[in-house]
Length: 113
View 1 (cartoon, rainbow, N blue to C red):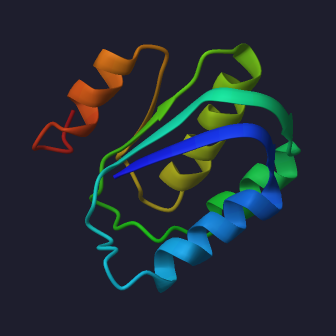
View 2 (cartoon, helix red, strand yellow; view 1 turned 60 degrees about the vertical axis):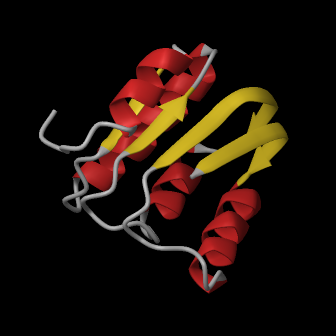
């Protein structure tokens, strides 16, 4: 699945997206995901709020999830999210600067990479 984020990003946006996915009857937790943050203009989310957002995941621990970024702040926040999810056993999240690399990784069959 593809998630495109644009404009202003807040904790409320992230939590609402998680809720929307969890309530969608067509959503399967085993889906892979590409989250594209390259159109974000401003982040209004603090480090502690990234931890709050990472406390819950609607995806399975085996899902591959790529986060595409194009700026240092987005990279830092995405890496914080990745580390928080790794601490609860989710090993399938990676942060990328390049779309082709992100797609290649998220579409790979094995989560061992």
